[in-house]
Each structure stands twice: as C-alpha cells, then as structure tokens.
Image 1: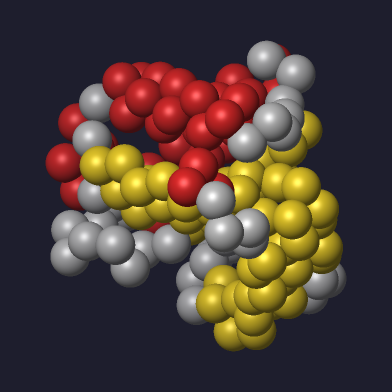
Image 2 (image 1 turned 60 degrees about the vertical axis):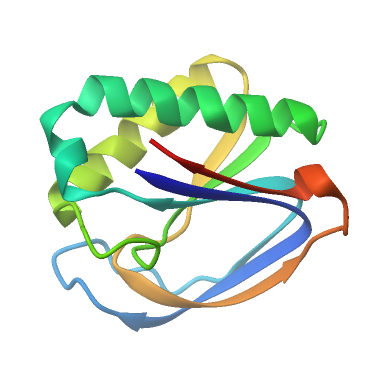
Length: 136
C-alpha cells in the first residue's frame, strides 16, 4: 500500500475519461473544502490481507485528518505510486470497507469516481502536515 495524503482547503474533480467500463458511469463534478484527500495505491501483495490493509489505511487517514483538524475525507484511487497494482475488484472493495469504517467513526467520507481519470484542482496550504506519505 502506498498512501499520499494531502490536506486541501479546496479540492475539485471532474470525470474526464472512463478507464474501467465495468464500474458506474459518473459524469458529475464535485468540489469540497477543508478535506483530507487520500491518494491510495493498493498493491498486489495487499490482496493477501484485506482486513489488515484496511485497518492500517483507516488508522493512517484518521491520524492525518486529526493533524489537519478535519473530519472530512476523500478516498481517491491513484495507481501511480508503485509498479505493483492490486486488481480493481480488490481496490474497490478496500475503498468501500474503508469508507464504511470512517463513516462509522463520524467522518464525512466520499470516494472519487472509481475507474476514471479525473481533472483535478487541489489547493493545499504550505505546512508540513498538509502532505504526508506512508508505505505499508
């Protein structure tokens, strides 16, 4: 698992190109304020331990959100942080489970459209805790 977390004062996405046709078609753009965006890259070896990877993912997201004084989180599939890639089916299941766990802990949580390349706009403050990378 590779995880890049960016605290954003403003985060915007617009679905540009659908790359995985088997997933839901979403054409609506969205914009958020004061949100931790988790750029998540699930790796092939993560598929051996879904529960363990999900637990570490959520723990790291909650820690970074607390550091940035927010309870608003966006999960974004970003398969560009490693050469090893988990299957889309595994990755989507991981996202759904992590979203449910975060919501159960009173975090407002969203996912960007899965299986899309997105146009993104990210505004992030220049403070040390606004950008955090984890590998596990």
